[in-house]
Image 1 (spheres, helix red, strand yellow):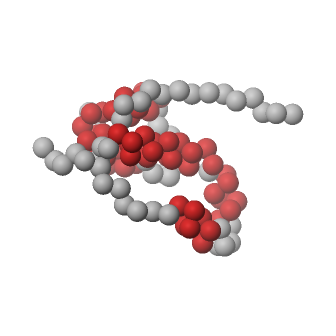
Image 2 (tube, helix red, strand yellow; image 1 turned 30 degrees about the vertical axis):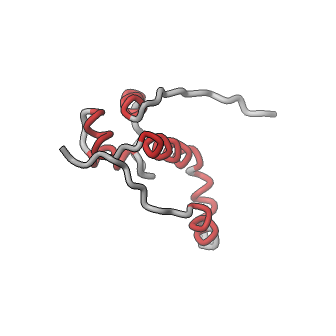
Image 3 (cartoon, helix red, strand yellow; image 1 turned 120 degrees about the vertical axis):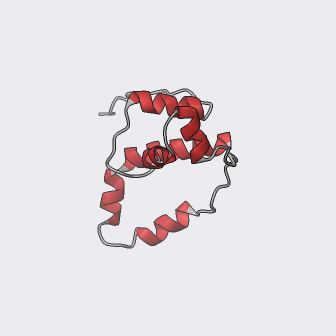
Amino acid sequence: MADLKYQPVPHDHDAFLQKAIKRKGFKEAYDSLEEEYGLIHELLSARSRSGLTQEAVAELMGTTKSAVSRLESASRHSPSLTTLKKYAKAVGCRLEIKLIPDLP
């Protein structure tokens, strides 16, 4: 069995954003993907808290590491609720979805 302990790579997201925001068109593109990036942040945070690698999550979900990698990336892939539930269970969480009314 593979080493299932998660060892995160250091990443300063704020520093990355400060540098990237200077690129033409970045802010508009980033803002348009706010919800997708929010989901990815939630997935990565949950996996980090659980201490699991992508391989371990994949094993618990009954899928492949590449499928977990795609789920955790900013691709144009929209995961199903079933997949999100399996991921949540694998990292020791439950899935909660909310619809928040827009304020006038």
